[in-house]
Length: 255
Image (cartoon, rainbow, N blue to C red; front, side, top):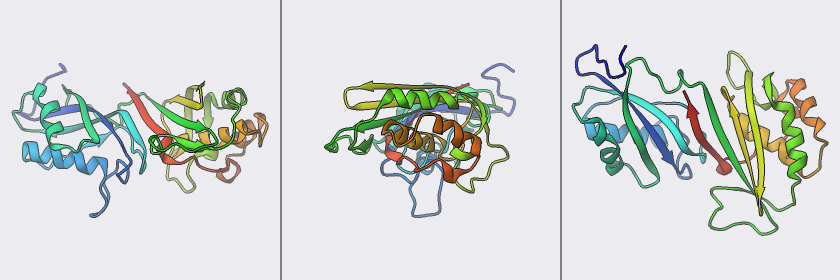
């Protein structure tokens, strides 16, 4: 099928890339009335623009307070709006903390979630005795010093294909907890420590649970080998605390 083939008359599949500040939202996933989410806000913008109640399919269901620089979504429309108009027109309908960065017409069978091959998340930690004010919604503040070299050593045990049950949220419904982590990169710049994780998929709160145990390693509460033991235990209670949401960003979805 050609990229812009349209076998159902005017029906089109529109792919958009989105950046958002998740601070004020109850995550990506649409919730009952009274809970404002990223998905529902974009869905409303699409309705205002096209007059259609289109479902907006996202590549990843980010939690409350989690941000994105490269979220991908798609929706179907019968509208005749030129593809190059969607970015400007949707941004005119959206609040300033949600921005559509690009739009394209894709095959009708493209699905933002099911066709994703990998995702990259980043997590930013601010290690300093004094908490940040301006960046408080975008970093996780820890008042103690962290040893990033120990964190890197601990993270190395998570590379590869494993059962990540210990790093999934308790009672998270999944057919399989097997995931492949391609890379974990940990870098320090001044008081900031940034953790980048690339994997073929993530379990619910998996990144935040991984960061939680790496922080314990960084503060030398455990030896780096502890990460291996936790992974092999396949038991969530062994992994320690979940890092808070505000330091987490969905950076990129790979297709």
